[in-house]
Length: 232
Image 1 (cartoon, rainbow, N blue to C red):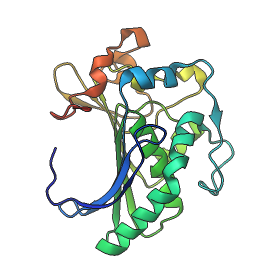
Image 2: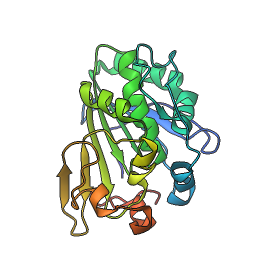
Image 3: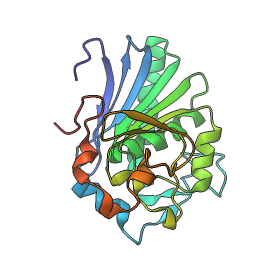
Image 4: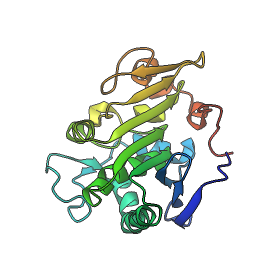
């Protein structure tokens, strides 16, 4: 999707050991944009279904002042940490250059998980902006305390799931992972259903529609989301 007025600020990553990412400014939306590269279902599924998944406390240097009860997926935390300082510097530069007061984090799949961690990280270091998060095909990132922290913060959160995508129900709740509020579920009919609360069990929402990973369809992970198919 082309955005002719978008102003790139900084980008990085190699698409291999570090996911591609970029920071820029959209004058039409009047917001700084932070985005991280996603991945395909075959690559992320083992990461979010492995029974040996470990949750850790976020790095206190990156996330000062967070409760020790907050835990997140170690793999996602490691990925976010690789680019955190560069992303912060780029966002600060964009805010200064464009006199911006809004920052929006976006991403799909693994990129959605990294961007959600950025959405918690950046407000701890930038006080003069409002923050929003929009994720697509978001896997669960942290525990109940993490989900509650996101819900209780001033962050605006929307995470959009497509039809029977199995990725958003992983890692499993039996491992202690919980989604924050803000789910929107694209139903088979194409209708977009709002799903209040955390892990809403309604059949109009992802937990009720895909009760088990075997009920999912990996091809739904790439969308389409509002007419846009990821990875094409």
